[in-house]
Length: 549
Ligand code: SIN
Image 1 (tube, rainbow, N blue to C red):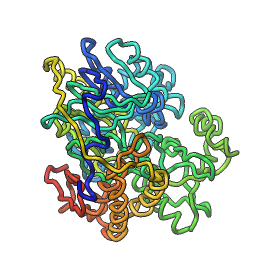
Image 2 (image 1 turned 30 degrees about the vertical axis):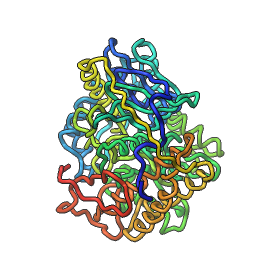
Image 3 (image 1 turned 90 degrees about the vertical axis):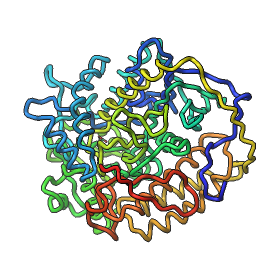
Image 4 (image 1 turned 180 degrees about the horizontal axis):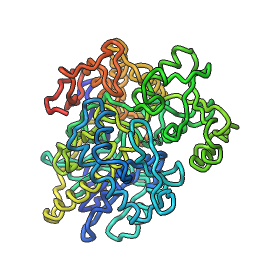
Protein backbone atom coordinates (compact mmCIF):
# COMPACT_ATOMS: atom_id res chain seq x y z
CA UNK A 1 0.00 0.00 0.00
CA UNK A 2 1.43 3.41 -0.90
CA UNK A 3 1.31 6.21 1.63
CA UNK A 4 -1.99 7.61 0.35
CA UNK A 5 -3.70 4.49 -0.83
CA UNK A 6 -7.04 3.60 0.65
CA UNK A 7 -6.78 -0.05 1.81
CA UNK A 8 -9.12 -2.62 0.20
CA UNK A 9 -10.30 -3.77 3.64
CA UNK A 10 -10.32 -1.75 6.84
CA UNK A 11 -9.24 -4.77 8.88
CA UNK A 12 -7.42 -8.04 8.29
CA UNK A 13 -9.48 -11.19 8.64
CA UNK A 14 -9.41 -14.85 7.83
CA UNK A 15 -12.57 -16.80 6.92
CA UNK A 16 -11.55 -19.84 8.94
CA UNK A 17 -11.34 -17.81 12.13
CA UNK A 18 -14.73 -16.11 11.84
CA UNK A 19 -18.35 -17.21 12.23
CA UNK A 20 -20.29 -17.31 8.97
CA UNK A 21 -23.93 -16.37 8.42
CA UNK A 22 -25.91 -16.93 5.21
CA UNK A 23 -28.73 -14.88 3.72
CA UNK A 24 -30.45 -14.69 0.38
CA UNK A 25 -30.75 -10.91 0.48
CA UNK A 26 -28.62 -8.83 2.84
CA UNK A 27 -29.74 -5.24 3.40
CA UNK A 28 -27.21 -2.83 4.85
CA UNK A 29 -29.14 -0.01 6.49
CA UNK A 30 -32.48 0.15 8.24
CA UNK A 31 -33.83 3.53 7.11
CA UNK A 32 -36.67 4.06 4.69
CA UNK A 33 -34.87 2.60 1.64
CA UNK A 34 -33.62 -0.52 3.39
CA UNK A 35 -36.93 -1.18 5.13
CA UNK A 36 -38.89 -0.68 1.90
CA UNK A 37 -36.52 -3.06 0.10
CA UNK A 38 -37.17 -5.72 2.73
CA UNK A 39 -40.94 -5.24 2.43
CA UNK A 40 -40.66 -5.93 -1.32
CA UNK A 41 -39.06 -9.36 -0.83
CA UNK A 42 -41.04 -12.62 -1.04
CA UNK A 43 -41.54 -14.83 2.05
CA UNK A 44 -39.51 -17.78 0.75
CA UNK A 45 -36.21 -15.89 1.02
CA UNK A 46 -34.07 -15.27 4.06
CA UNK A 47 -33.71 -11.50 4.33
CA UNK A 48 -31.40 -9.89 6.84
CA UNK A 49 -31.40 -6.16 7.63
CA UNK A 50 -28.45 -4.69 9.52
CA UNK A 51 -29.06 -1.51 11.53
CA UNK A 52 -26.00 0.49 12.61
CA UNK A 53 -27.89 1.54 15.72
CA UNK A 54 -31.63 0.82 16.01
CA UNK A 55 -34.01 1.08 13.03
CA UNK A 56 -36.06 3.53 15.09
CA UNK A 57 -33.11 5.94 15.21
CA UNK A 58 -32.03 5.89 11.56
CA UNK A 59 -31.50 9.17 9.75
CA UNK A 60 -34.88 8.63 8.01
CA UNK A 61 -36.57 8.61 11.41
CA UNK A 62 -35.25 12.15 11.91
CA UNK A 63 -37.04 13.48 8.82
CA UNK A 64 -39.40 16.29 9.69
CA UNK A 65 -40.97 17.77 6.57
CA UNK A 66 -42.54 14.92 4.68
CA UNK A 67 -42.94 13.09 1.39
CA UNK A 68 -43.71 14.78 -1.91
CA UNK A 69 -46.38 13.21 -4.11
CA UNK A 70 -49.07 14.52 -6.42
CA UNK A 71 -52.35 13.92 -4.58
CA UNK A 72 -54.33 17.07 -5.28
CA UNK A 73 -56.51 17.51 -8.39
CA UNK A 74 -55.07 21.03 -8.70
CA UNK A 75 -51.60 19.58 -9.14
CA UNK A 76 -50.12 17.32 -11.83
CA UNK A 77 -47.24 14.89 -12.26
CA UNK A 78 -45.69 17.22 -14.82
CA UNK A 79 -45.69 20.06 -12.24
CA UNK A 80 -43.79 17.88 -9.78
CA UNK A 81 -41.33 16.75 -12.46
CA UNK A 82 -40.78 20.35 -13.54
CA UNK A 83 -40.14 21.50 -9.96
CA UNK A 84 -37.66 18.63 -9.48
CA UNK A 85 -35.79 19.52 -12.68
CA UNK A 86 -35.65 23.24 -11.84
CA UNK A 87 -34.29 22.51 -8.36
CA UNK A 88 -31.73 20.09 -9.86
CA UNK A 89 -30.24 22.92 -11.92
CA UNK A 90 -29.75 21.08 -15.20
CA UNK A 91 -28.34 17.84 -13.88
CA UNK A 92 -31.42 15.68 -13.18
CA UNK A 93 -32.17 12.69 -15.34
CA UNK A 94 -35.65 13.59 -16.60
CA UNK A 95 -36.66 9.99 -17.19
CA UNK A 96 -35.76 9.03 -13.63
CA UNK A 97 -37.54 12.10 -12.24
CA UNK A 98 -40.66 11.23 -14.24
CA UNK A 99 -40.66 7.63 -13.00
CA UNK A 100 -40.10 8.51 -9.35
CA UNK A 101 -42.76 11.24 -9.39
CA UNK A 102 -45.18 8.83 -11.12
CA UNK A 103 -44.61 6.15 -8.45
CA UNK A 104 -44.78 8.51 -5.45
CA UNK A 105 -48.57 8.53 -4.89
CA UNK A 106 -48.66 4.69 -4.99
CA UNK A 107 -45.81 4.52 -2.51
CA UNK A 108 -47.65 6.89 -0.14
CA UNK A 109 -50.74 4.66 -0.45
CA UNK A 110 -48.57 1.61 0.40
CA UNK A 111 -47.36 3.39 3.54
CA UNK A 112 -50.95 3.99 4.58
CA UNK A 113 -51.58 0.26 4.05
CA UNK A 114 -48.53 -0.57 6.20
CA UNK A 115 -50.24 1.38 9.00
CA UNK A 116 -48.57 4.80 8.76
CA UNK A 117 -50.84 7.56 10.07
CA UNK A 118 -50.36 10.72 8.06
CA UNK A 119 -51.91 14.00 9.18
CA UNK A 120 -55.34 14.55 7.66
CA UNK A 121 -57.89 17.25 7.11
CA UNK A 122 -61.15 15.36 7.36
CA UNK A 123 -60.62 12.18 5.37
CA UNK A 124 -58.02 13.65 3.05
CA UNK A 125 -54.28 13.64 3.59
CA UNK A 126 -53.17 17.13 4.65
CA UNK A 127 -50.80 18.66 2.10
CA UNK A 128 -48.28 21.40 2.63
CA UNK A 129 -45.60 23.07 0.52
CA UNK A 130 -41.87 23.63 0.82
CA UNK A 131 -39.14 25.51 -1.05
CA UNK A 132 -39.19 24.94 -4.82
CA UNK A 133 -42.65 23.31 -4.90
CA UNK A 134 -45.20 25.08 -7.09
CA UNK A 135 -48.13 23.27 -5.43
CA UNK A 136 -49.02 21.85 -2.03
CA UNK A 137 -47.99 18.19 -2.30
CA UNK A 138 -46.08 17.27 0.88
CA UNK A 139 -47.73 14.72 3.15
CA UNK A 140 -46.61 14.76 6.77
CA UNK A 141 -47.21 13.02 10.08
CA UNK A 142 -47.29 13.95 13.77
CA UNK A 143 -47.00 17.57 12.59
CA UNK A 144 -43.25 17.71 12.12
CA UNK A 145 -42.13 14.14 12.90
CA UNK A 146 -42.94 12.46 9.59
CA UNK A 147 -39.88 10.21 9.59
CA UNK A 148 -40.63 8.89 13.07
CA UNK A 149 -44.16 7.84 12.13
CA UNK A 150 -43.23 6.47 8.71
CA UNK A 151 -40.46 4.35 10.20
CA UNK A 152 -42.71 3.17 13.05
CA UNK A 153 -45.24 1.85 10.56
CA UNK A 154 -42.66 0.23 8.28
CA UNK A 155 -40.65 -1.35 11.10
CA UNK A 156 -43.83 -2.79 12.64
CA UNK A 157 -44.77 -4.26 9.27
CA UNK A 158 -41.28 -5.73 8.72
CA UNK A 159 -41.23 -7.22 12.23
CA UNK A 160 -44.54 -8.96 11.50
CA UNK A 161 -42.96 -10.88 8.58
CA UNK A 162 -41.09 -14.01 9.62
CA UNK A 163 -38.72 -14.09 6.66
CA UNK A 164 -37.23 -10.69 7.62
CA UNK A 165 -34.72 -10.45 10.46
CA UNK A 166 -33.41 -7.14 11.79
CA UNK A 167 -30.09 -7.11 13.61
CA UNK A 168 -29.46 -4.03 15.75
CA UNK A 169 -26.14 -2.30 16.37
CA UNK A 170 -24.31 -4.10 13.61
CA UNK A 171 -21.49 -2.19 11.94
CA UNK A 172 -20.61 -2.91 8.34
CA UNK A 173 -16.83 -2.92 8.07
CA UNK A 174 -16.55 -3.81 4.38
CA UNK A 175 -18.27 -5.45 1.45
CA UNK A 176 -16.89 -8.87 0.54
CA UNK A 177 -16.09 -9.49 -3.10
CA UNK A 178 -15.22 -12.64 -5.00
CA UNK A 179 -14.21 -12.64 -8.64
CA UNK A 180 -15.62 -9.15 -9.19
CA UNK A 181 -18.96 -9.79 -7.45
CA UNK A 182 -20.27 -8.60 -4.13
CA UNK A 183 -20.88 -11.73 -2.04
CA UNK A 184 -21.82 -10.19 1.32
CA UNK A 185 -20.28 -8.15 4.08
CA UNK A 186 -17.80 -8.30 6.91
CA UNK A 187 -19.55 -6.89 9.96
CA UNK A 188 -19.06 -6.28 13.64
CA UNK A 189 -22.06 -7.54 15.62
CA UNK A 190 -23.77 -6.00 18.64
CA UNK A 191 -21.35 -8.02 20.80
CA UNK A 192 -18.33 -6.78 18.88
CA UNK A 193 -17.89 -10.18 17.21
CA UNK A 194 -16.67 -10.07 13.61
CA UNK A 195 -18.87 -12.06 11.26
CA UNK A 196 -18.81 -12.87 7.58
CA UNK A 197 -22.31 -12.60 6.17
CA UNK A 198 -22.60 -14.31 2.80
CA UNK A 199 -25.51 -13.23 0.67
CA UNK A 200 -26.65 -14.03 -2.83
CA UNK A 201 -27.53 -10.37 -3.32
CA UNK A 202 -26.69 -7.32 -1.21
CA UNK A 203 -28.59 -4.03 -1.02
CA UNK A 204 -26.79 -0.96 0.22
CA UNK A 205 -29.14 1.47 1.95
CA UNK A 206 -26.77 3.03 4.45
CA UNK A 207 -27.39 6.75 3.88
CA UNK A 208 -24.98 9.63 3.42
CA UNK A 209 -22.03 11.32 5.11
CA UNK A 210 -23.54 14.57 6.49
CA UNK A 211 -21.58 14.08 9.71
CA UNK A 212 -18.40 15.02 7.87
CA UNK A 213 -19.37 18.58 8.85
CA UNK A 214 -19.53 19.97 12.36
CA UNK A 215 -22.82 21.77 11.58
CA UNK A 216 -25.06 18.93 10.42
CA UNK A 217 -28.72 17.99 10.70
CA UNK A 218 -27.86 14.30 10.41
CA UNK A 219 -27.94 11.57 12.99
CA UNK A 220 -24.45 10.61 14.32
CA UNK A 221 -24.57 7.43 12.23
CA UNK A 222 -24.30 9.34 8.91
CA UNK A 223 -20.57 8.79 8.42
CA UNK A 224 -20.53 7.51 4.83
CA UNK A 225 -19.67 3.92 5.83
CA UNK A 226 -21.61 2.32 2.97
CA UNK A 227 -20.31 4.74 0.36
CA UNK A 228 -16.72 4.19 1.50
CA UNK A 229 -17.15 0.40 1.60
CA UNK A 230 -18.63 0.45 -1.92
CA UNK A 231 -15.71 2.59 -3.08
CA UNK A 232 -13.17 0.17 -1.61
CA UNK A 233 -15.01 -2.76 -3.22
CA UNK A 234 -14.76 -1.12 -6.65
CA UNK A 235 -18.28 0.26 -7.21
CA UNK A 236 -18.61 3.47 -9.18
CA UNK A 237 -19.40 6.68 -7.27
CA UNK A 238 -20.08 10.10 -8.73
CA UNK A 239 -21.00 13.74 -8.05
CA UNK A 240 -19.56 13.87 -4.54
CA UNK A 241 -19.09 17.65 -4.83
CA UNK A 242 -22.82 18.12 -4.29
CA UNK A 243 -23.56 18.34 -0.56
CA UNK A 244 -26.88 19.94 0.26
CA UNK A 245 -26.93 22.43 3.13
CA UNK A 246 -30.29 22.88 4.80
CA UNK A 247 -30.92 26.59 5.26
CA UNK A 248 -32.40 26.53 8.73
CA UNK A 249 -30.76 24.73 11.62
CA UNK A 250 -31.36 25.99 15.16
CA UNK A 251 -28.34 27.97 16.29
CA UNK A 252 -28.24 28.38 20.03
CA UNK A 253 -25.09 27.76 22.02
CA UNK A 254 -25.51 24.48 23.82
CA UNK A 255 -28.29 23.12 21.62
CA UNK A 256 -27.86 20.18 19.34
CA UNK A 257 -28.11 21.44 15.78
CA UNK A 258 -31.85 20.70 15.44
CA UNK A 259 -33.39 21.01 12.03
CA UNK A 260 -36.10 23.64 11.68
CA UNK A 261 -38.12 22.10 8.88
CA UNK A 262 -38.47 23.74 5.52
CA UNK A 263 -42.20 23.27 6.05
CA UNK A 264 -42.00 26.20 8.50
CA UNK A 265 -41.21 28.49 5.56
CA UNK A 266 -43.71 26.50 3.51
CA UNK A 267 -46.37 27.57 6.02
CA UNK A 268 -45.32 31.20 5.63
CA UNK A 269 -42.38 31.97 7.97
CA UNK A 270 -40.03 34.81 6.98
CA UNK A 271 -36.26 35.00 7.18
CA UNK A 272 -34.78 38.17 8.66
CA UNK A 273 -31.24 39.39 9.15
CA UNK A 274 -30.00 40.80 12.44
CA UNK A 275 -31.45 44.22 11.54
CA UNK A 276 -34.88 42.76 10.82
CA UNK A 277 -34.66 42.97 7.00
CA UNK A 278 -36.40 40.25 4.96
CA UNK A 279 -33.34 39.70 2.79
CA UNK A 280 -34.83 36.87 0.64
CA UNK A 281 -37.14 39.38 -1.09
CA UNK A 282 -34.14 40.78 -2.94
CA UNK A 283 -32.67 37.35 -3.72
CA UNK A 284 -35.39 35.45 -5.54
CA UNK A 285 -38.98 36.05 -6.66
CA UNK A 286 -39.99 33.03 -4.54
CA UNK A 287 -38.36 34.70 -1.50
CA UNK A 288 -38.26 32.25 1.45
CA UNK A 289 -39.70 29.49 -0.75
CA UNK A 290 -36.83 29.48 -3.22
CA UNK A 291 -34.92 26.21 -3.53
CA UNK A 292 -32.52 25.21 -0.77
CA UNK A 293 -29.28 25.99 -2.58
CA UNK A 294 -30.41 29.58 -3.15
CA UNK A 295 -31.73 30.14 0.38
CA UNK A 296 -28.71 28.53 2.08
CA UNK A 297 -26.30 30.65 0.02
CA UNK A 298 -28.29 33.84 0.69
CA UNK A 299 -28.16 33.14 4.44
CA UNK A 300 -24.43 32.44 4.27
CA UNK A 301 -23.80 35.75 2.49
CA UNK A 302 -26.12 37.64 4.82
CA UNK A 303 -24.24 36.29 7.83
CA UNK A 304 -20.98 37.48 6.25
CA UNK A 305 -22.40 40.87 5.33
CA UNK A 306 -23.88 41.53 8.74
CA UNK A 307 -20.97 39.88 10.58
CA UNK A 308 -23.54 37.97 12.63
CA UNK A 309 -23.39 34.21 13.27
CA UNK A 310 -26.98 33.53 12.24
CA UNK A 311 -30.19 34.90 10.74
CA UNK A 312 -33.69 34.55 12.18
CA UNK A 313 -36.89 32.73 11.31
CA UNK A 314 -39.94 34.84 12.04
CA UNK A 315 -43.34 33.16 12.55
CA UNK A 316 -44.85 35.99 14.60
CA UNK A 317 -47.33 36.96 11.88
CA UNK A 318 -48.79 33.40 11.74
CA UNK A 319 -51.63 32.05 13.89
CA UNK A 320 -49.89 30.91 17.13
CA UNK A 321 -52.28 28.01 17.74
CA UNK A 322 -51.75 26.70 14.22
CA UNK A 323 -47.97 27.10 14.56
CA UNK A 324 -47.85 25.08 17.79
CA UNK A 325 -50.22 22.42 16.47
CA UNK A 326 -48.38 22.07 13.16
CA UNK A 327 -44.82 22.01 14.57
CA UNK A 328 -44.96 20.44 18.04
CA UNK A 329 -41.45 18.91 17.89
CA UNK A 330 -39.79 22.13 16.75
CA UNK A 331 -41.74 24.07 19.39
CA UNK A 332 -40.45 21.66 22.05
CA UNK A 333 -36.84 21.88 20.84
CA UNK A 334 -36.98 25.70 20.91
CA UNK A 335 -38.80 25.79 24.25
CA UNK A 336 -35.73 24.08 25.80
CA UNK A 337 -34.00 27.42 25.21
CA UNK A 338 -36.94 29.57 26.33
CA UNK A 339 -37.91 30.35 22.74
CA UNK A 340 -41.60 30.37 21.80
CA UNK A 341 -41.69 29.72 18.05
CA UNK A 342 -44.88 31.75 17.64
CA UNK A 343 -43.61 34.80 19.53
CA UNK A 344 -39.80 34.86 19.37
CA UNK A 345 -37.34 35.14 16.53
CA UNK A 346 -35.62 31.77 16.03
CA UNK A 347 -31.83 31.97 15.42
CA UNK A 348 -30.88 29.70 12.51
CA UNK A 349 -28.02 29.06 10.12
CA UNK A 350 -27.35 26.45 7.41
CA UNK A 351 -26.08 22.94 8.19
CA UNK A 352 -25.02 19.95 6.09
CA UNK A 353 -28.15 17.95 5.37
CA UNK A 354 -28.06 15.60 2.40
CA UNK A 355 -25.33 13.88 0.37
CA UNK A 356 -26.50 14.23 -3.22
CA UNK A 357 -23.65 12.29 -4.82
CA UNK A 358 -22.99 8.67 -4.08
CA UNK A 359 -22.96 5.18 -5.57
CA UNK A 360 -24.13 5.35 -9.19
CA UNK A 361 -27.17 3.16 -9.87
CA UNK A 362 -29.16 2.24 -12.95
CA UNK A 363 -32.95 2.72 -13.04
CA UNK A 364 -33.42 -0.60 -11.18
CA UNK A 365 -30.96 0.25 -8.43
CA UNK A 366 -28.10 -1.93 -9.71
CA UNK A 367 -24.63 -0.59 -9.00
CA UNK A 368 -21.61 -1.17 -11.24
CA UNK A 369 -20.55 -4.03 -8.92
CA UNK A 370 -22.35 -7.30 -9.70
CA UNK A 371 -24.45 -8.54 -6.79
CA UNK A 372 -24.67 -5.08 -5.21
CA UNK A 373 -27.78 -2.91 -5.37
CA UNK A 374 -28.29 0.46 -3.73
CA UNK A 375 -31.17 2.73 -2.76
CA UNK A 376 -31.72 6.09 -1.06
CA UNK A 377 -29.20 8.68 0.04
CA UNK A 378 -26.23 6.35 -0.49
CA UNK A 379 -26.89 6.54 -4.24
CA UNK A 380 -26.67 8.92 -7.12
CA UNK A 381 -29.70 7.87 -9.14
CA UNK A 382 -30.07 10.98 -11.30
CA UNK A 383 -33.22 12.20 -9.50
CA UNK A 384 -31.71 15.09 -7.57
CA UNK A 385 -29.30 16.56 -10.11
CA UNK A 386 -27.20 19.25 -8.46
CA UNK A 387 -29.71 20.18 -5.76
CA UNK A 388 -32.42 17.99 -4.25
CA UNK A 389 -35.98 19.29 -4.16
CA UNK A 390 -37.35 19.30 -0.60
CA UNK A 391 -39.18 16.10 0.42
CA UNK A 392 -38.05 14.17 -2.65
CA UNK A 393 -35.60 12.06 -0.66
CA UNK A 394 -38.04 9.81 1.18
CA UNK A 395 -39.93 9.02 -2.02
CA UNK A 396 -36.67 8.19 -3.76
CA UNK A 397 -35.88 5.80 -0.91
CA UNK A 398 -39.28 4.16 -1.28
CA UNK A 399 -39.20 3.85 -5.07
CA UNK A 400 -35.63 2.58 -5.30
CA UNK A 401 -35.99 0.49 -2.15
CA UNK A 402 -38.88 -1.32 -3.83
CA UNK A 403 -36.99 -1.77 -7.10
CA UNK A 404 -33.92 -3.11 -5.30
CA UNK A 405 -36.02 -5.42 -3.12
CA UNK A 406 -37.81 -6.88 -6.16
CA UNK A 407 -34.72 -7.05 -8.40
CA UNK A 408 -32.39 -8.51 -5.77
CA UNK A 409 -35.01 -11.11 -4.79
CA UNK A 410 -35.51 -12.24 -8.38
CA UNK A 411 -31.78 -12.55 -8.84
CA UNK A 412 -31.29 -14.37 -5.51
CA UNK A 413 -34.10 -16.82 -6.35
CA UNK A 414 -32.35 -17.77 -9.58
CA UNK A 415 -29.04 -18.53 -7.85
CA UNK A 416 -28.25 -21.94 -6.32
CA UNK A 417 -27.67 -22.35 -2.60
CA UNK A 418 -23.92 -22.39 -2.95
CA UNK A 419 -21.81 -19.63 -1.55
CA UNK A 420 -18.29 -18.97 -2.71
CA UNK A 421 -16.15 -18.43 0.31
CA UNK A 422 -12.82 -17.19 -0.99
CA UNK A 423 -9.72 -18.05 1.02
CA UNK A 424 -9.03 -14.48 2.00
CA UNK A 425 -6.13 -14.10 4.30
CA UNK A 426 -4.44 -10.76 4.60
CA UNK A 427 -1.08 -11.17 6.16
CA UNK A 428 0.20 -7.62 5.88
CA UNK A 429 0.52 -6.27 9.42
CA UNK A 430 -0.57 -2.68 9.87
CA UNK A 431 0.18 -0.21 12.62
CA UNK A 432 -2.34 -0.18 15.43
CA UNK A 433 -4.77 2.72 15.65
CA UNK A 434 -4.54 2.76 19.44
CA UNK A 435 -2.06 5.60 19.73
CA UNK A 436 -4.09 8.03 17.58
CA UNK A 437 -6.51 10.56 19.02
CA UNK A 438 -9.31 9.75 16.58
CA UNK A 439 -11.69 12.34 18.03
CA UNK A 440 -9.09 15.07 17.52
CA UNK A 441 -8.60 14.21 13.83
CA UNK A 442 -12.37 13.98 13.37
CA UNK A 443 -12.87 17.44 14.85
CA UNK A 444 -10.13 18.87 12.64
CA UNK A 445 -11.62 17.19 9.55
CA UNK A 446 -15.10 18.54 10.34
CA UNK A 447 -13.83 22.08 10.81
CA UNK A 448 -11.78 21.90 7.62
CA UNK A 449 -14.75 20.65 5.59
CA UNK A 450 -16.93 23.51 6.89
CA UNK A 451 -14.26 26.10 6.15
CA UNK A 452 -13.02 24.89 2.78
CA UNK A 453 -15.67 22.57 1.30
CA UNK A 454 -18.75 24.41 2.53
CA UNK A 455 -21.47 26.48 0.89
CA UNK A 456 -18.89 28.44 -1.12
CA UNK A 457 -15.54 27.05 -2.28
CA UNK A 458 -12.47 28.21 -4.23
CA UNK A 459 -9.83 26.18 -6.05
CA UNK A 460 -7.16 27.54 -3.74
CA UNK A 461 -8.99 26.57 -0.54
CA UNK A 462 -9.82 23.16 -1.98
CA UNK A 463 -6.19 22.49 -2.89
CA UNK A 464 -5.13 23.36 0.63
CA UNK A 465 -7.85 21.15 2.07
CA UNK A 466 -6.73 18.32 -0.16
CA UNK A 467 -3.14 18.60 1.03
CA UNK A 468 -4.33 18.52 4.64
CA UNK A 469 -6.63 15.54 4.12
CA UNK A 470 -3.91 13.70 2.18
CA UNK A 471 -1.61 14.20 5.13
CA UNK A 472 -4.17 12.70 7.54
CA UNK A 473 -4.89 9.83 5.15
CA UNK A 474 -1.19 9.02 5.06
CA UNK A 475 -1.10 8.00 8.70
CA UNK A 476 -4.72 6.97 9.30
CA UNK A 477 -5.10 4.55 6.39
CA UNK A 478 -1.98 2.60 7.23
CA UNK A 479 -3.38 1.79 10.65
CA UNK A 480 -5.81 -0.93 11.61
CA UNK A 481 -8.48 0.18 14.08
CA UNK A 482 -10.27 -2.13 16.44
CA UNK A 483 -13.65 -0.42 16.50
CA UNK A 484 -16.27 1.97 15.21
CA UNK A 485 -14.60 5.36 15.78
CA UNK A 486 -11.48 4.46 13.83
CA UNK A 487 -13.48 2.86 11.00
CA UNK A 488 -15.72 5.92 10.78
CA UNK A 489 -12.68 8.19 10.61
CA UNK A 490 -11.15 6.07 7.81
CA UNK A 491 -14.47 6.18 5.93
CA UNK A 492 -14.91 9.93 6.39
CA UNK A 493 -11.42 10.51 5.02
CA UNK A 494 -12.41 8.58 1.88
CA UNK A 495 -15.51 10.77 1.63
CA UNK A 496 -13.48 13.95 2.15
CA UNK A 497 -11.02 13.02 -0.58
CA UNK A 498 -13.81 12.22 -3.04
CA UNK A 499 -15.76 15.38 -2.20
CA UNK A 500 -12.72 17.63 -2.50
CA UNK A 501 -11.66 15.97 -5.73
CA UNK A 502 -15.12 16.42 -7.24
CA UNK A 503 -15.28 20.05 -6.09
CA UNK A 504 -11.88 20.79 -7.61
CA UNK A 505 -12.82 19.13 -10.86
CA UNK A 506 -16.14 20.93 -11.38
CA UNK A 507 -14.89 24.37 -12.38
CA UNK A 508 -18.32 25.98 -12.50
CA UNK A 509 -21.17 26.78 -10.07
CA UNK A 510 -24.32 24.70 -10.17
CA UNK A 511 -26.93 23.78 -7.57
CA UNK A 512 -25.31 23.19 -4.20
CA UNK A 513 -21.77 23.53 -5.59
CA UNK A 514 -20.67 27.18 -5.67
CA UNK A 515 -17.11 28.04 -6.71
CA UNK A 516 -16.28 31.69 -5.95
CA UNK A 517 -13.54 31.47 -8.58
CA UNK A 518 -16.00 30.03 -11.17
CA UNK A 519 -19.29 31.69 -10.19
CA UNK A 520 -21.22 30.91 -13.39
CA UNK A 521 -22.94 27.78 -14.61
CA UNK A 522 -21.14 26.28 -17.61
CA UNK A 523 -23.51 23.96 -19.46
CA UNK A 524 -21.12 23.45 -22.34
CA UNK A 525 -18.48 21.73 -20.21
CA UNK A 526 -20.26 20.67 -17.06
CA UNK A 527 -23.81 19.59 -17.72
CA UNK A 528 -22.62 16.12 -16.86
CA UNK A 529 -21.69 13.95 -13.93
CA UNK A 530 -18.25 13.76 -12.40
CA UNK A 531 -17.10 10.19 -11.80
CA UNK A 532 -15.01 9.53 -8.72
CA UNK A 533 -11.62 7.89 -9.27
CA UNK A 534 -11.46 4.11 -8.90
CA UNK A 535 -8.57 4.33 -6.47
CA UNK A 536 -7.26 7.04 -4.20
CA UNK A 537 -3.53 7.25 -4.49
CA UNK A 538 -1.28 10.30 -4.17
CA UNK A 539 -2.28 13.15 -6.46
CA UNK A 540 -5.38 12.29 -8.44
CA UNK A 541 -7.41 14.15 -10.97
CA UNK A 542 -10.91 13.30 -12.07
CA UNK A 543 -12.20 13.23 -15.55
CA UNK A 544 -15.77 14.18 -16.31
CA UNK A 545 -17.72 11.19 -17.55
CA UNK A 546 -19.67 11.44 -20.72
CA UNK A 547 -22.63 9.51 -19.41
CA UNK A 548 -24.77 12.66 -19.54
CA UNK A 549 -27.29 13.76 -16.96
C1 SIN B 1 -37.23 19.46 6.16
O1 SIN B 1 -38.15 19.13 6.90
O2 SIN B 1 -36.94 20.62 5.95
C2 SIN B 1 -36.40 18.38 5.54
C3 SIN B 1 -37.10 17.77 4.42
C4 SIN B 1 -36.14 17.26 3.40
O3 SIN B 1 -34.95 17.20 3.64
O4 SIN B 1 -36.59 16.96 2.29
